[in-house]
Image (cartoon, rainbow, N blue to C red):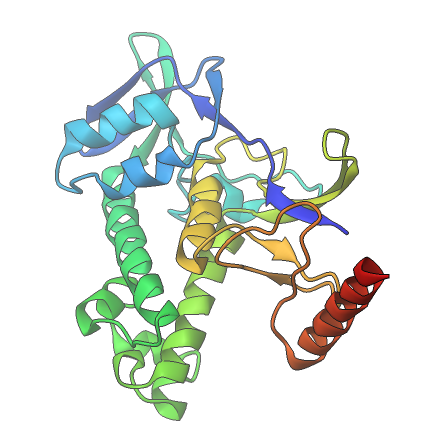
Length: 271
């Protein structure tokens, strides 16, 4: 059975990061690298979006977003297949040293949005609709819903649970898409089984935004992702099953197959 997990993602850590004129400047020379950790998301959502020094310290520890000058989005938004994107952060020179510059406004928005998504995710998972204030953080104007048909076809998400679920899923998916997150299929030699990893493409020079998206997906779903052995659909159990533990996604056909297999094992054990 394929196993799903987080592949090792190396975050790019600049040698020097500083704040200049409401921009985050990261030295563009050969950076250091460190393995991404779940703590990155928790450190991120604890940030005060108005505390520039705190944002700078986070970037020194976990890296920068690589926000491109042309579109104001992370570098990863332009990565498709094997193509080489032409979107890069604005480059500046300070004392003869090249730096990449990205707006702190993008960081402030992402901090608020990630925090609101985590709150809404917990609410929607429990069958509640979430606070209007949080919905307005991730979708500031109802007019933007009109472009997707939300406002004309459905009630506001804070008033209608099916709408809340659908819109929330679309926002998490949009973060993953911009972050260049893709599944990767490979053999896991330690577990001696096939594995499906969710990771950022190898050619993303700044994978932090995508990594935060992976952690958001996992956090709001209540745990790590696994694969149903009966329908091969990925789902998020409250607890990851053990290596030899039976489990299923909960769909009616899969539940029937699960109980049939369980009874078969019980009969075999009694013989």
